[in-house]
Image (tube, rainbow, N blue to C red; front, side):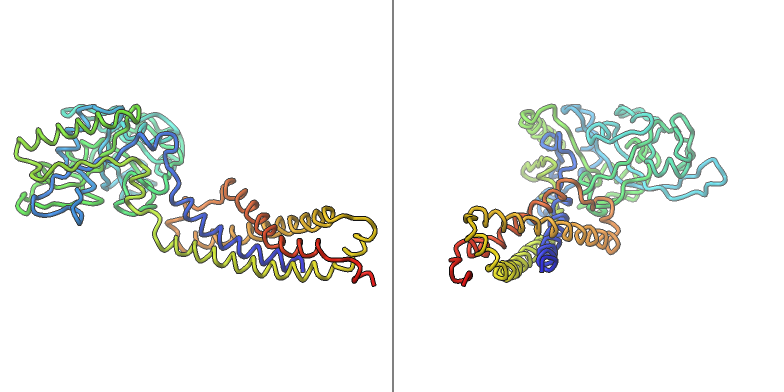
Length: 416
């Protein structure tokens, strides 16, 4: 009977914790120490008669011109524009076959702004407009693939038809969700390599991610795309303190007015600054389907609790003769209540163990069914303690009415 009660509670706990774990992990703050000071920037450089995003929102990316102008104005603590691209990597070691590397072209302040951890070396500083060097930062897996995991800082790497110098190697870094660029997916794996943003223009690398244009006659050349109003670059800034937001908003307002005088930005000024938390909410990282699943699991937990309460009532009813004898020998109601409460807590602990085991199995099953979620699905200590707490609380709630019924029984009729 005890195992059956604990299993009933454990099933309800497991279903609830699996769904809650997904919501908790998907919506987890990727920059908990400064998410309120890191902002995604949107500028509305779209056509006067159309909207970039319905009903009337600016595009989520910015043009090449705006990206460079705002980054090089240096009005924030850190500022970086970035875009995803790709190209061939041809290691000097003939035993390592060439491969198509996924590349993030960005400014150097991308790394301190997003607290990117380094295993070896460091990132580059933001280069001036008219100067750039062929340097690269490797992901940990790429460094393992090419250099066997050794410190490769200072090594030369042939890629993109050029020779690049490795100046840094990242440690394990897989922000989930991938908040800074969700164009390829909210949980897309990190890039293989990182290069200065100007390299993308100099070598005319492909435009990855979201690339949108409202102009139809921009020309076929790569430079024509860069000079146009086409958007492809994510723009992020970090402020020294949250109170600086108004000052930066004023700067953006002035910038748009200056560009409007040059014949750009025909629409009413609509600049948007969203911090990390607001940006995740705007992108709907946690889908409505998962919330529905969570609500259904809560109902299932209630059903399990009603069943557990019924089983506990049966269990305690079978003990009425024993409890009546204890009362006759001098045990008061508080002692009986404590006995039943301790038993329900022990059942809750057993239910927590069963629920935790099923929860781990369920999350591992999700990893197998949805490999893109495998990087962030873990059962951390917070969720472990929540599982134990909810299980014990559930068992106490389920056993409260049966316990009270047992405590108020009249022992005389049972002693006969």
